[in-house]
Amino acid sequence: MPATLTAIAPKVEYTSDNFQRYYEEAGPDYAAWSPHFNMHFGFFRSCMNPFNREAMLEQMNREVLDRLQTSSDHPRILDMGCGLGATLRSFARRLPTADLHGITLVHWQLEQGRLLNQSTPQSTNITLNLGNYEHTAYPSESFDAICAIESSCYSAGRSKSRLIREAYRLLRPGGRFVVADGFLGAGKLRGLQQSIYRKLCDCWVIEDLGEIHAFTRELQRAGFTEIAIEQIQSRVTPSVLHVPWVTLKFLLTSVIFGQRKMTRARWNNILAPILLPFVGHPIGPLAYYIVSATRT
Image 1 (tube, rainbow, N blue to C red):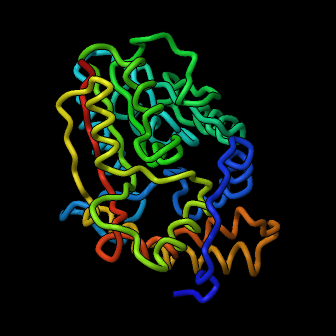
Image 2 (image 1 turned 90 degrees about the vertical axis):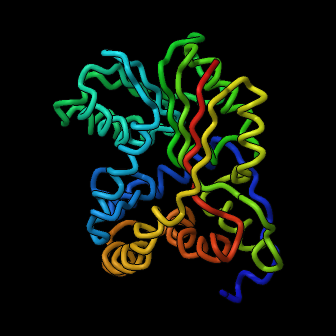
Image 3 (image 1 turned 135 degrees about the vertical axis):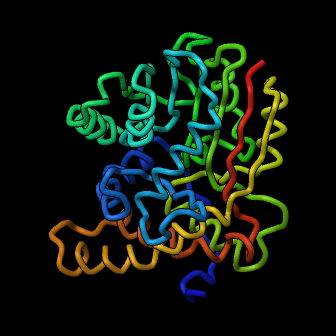
């Protein structure tokens, strides 16, 4: 493990300003991971080519959409923490009559996402808005389905109670809530892992990752039923294995021979996925889950 991590890393002070600064500085670098700006890991099925990263990223979008179980002809769907809207554009290709909405805190993501939507014919039914997904301006019971792909981690606390309660408020009775993200599961962070974990959170400007049991208890307290917990680390691992190659390619093309200035946020974006295996399953308690629930 890197010697520089032997000292205890301080807990990051989360603010919307440093969150926005991180994504404005490091956000464009995600194009090295996905040309379509799918800013998440992929889902692998046995019939797939493990070297085709974009196909696995798109498959994650499909898996989430399948679990949303939209049945109406014109479902209204919200992506809480939509990034540049890649997941919504994926949904639009499969649900051309859906009313799709996304919310993000980052001005750059909103502007670039809207530009990408304009160049995609199927995206006329996508609306992106600026705002905090813990406290939205949408009326209660506005949506048939809500998803959060690798964005629930930015909600406060390990139970993510504010995110859950806002999702419950926004869903219509019978509506579905699906979250795909990394969560702390059974077991503890031991020794140096605690420092690595804090540095990982600092890199991604996260206050704390969710804790899976606290998260599902909060879903129950909020009133959700039919809660399904799927630990899908093995499905995600093939895309995670792309990280070293993408990182090396990025360092060569963007850092050594590139023109953009390397900021702390951009370096952190490189460091975070390198640290991930030291606290991730099976070495540590961090694993990838899809959690689905129904609003009563």
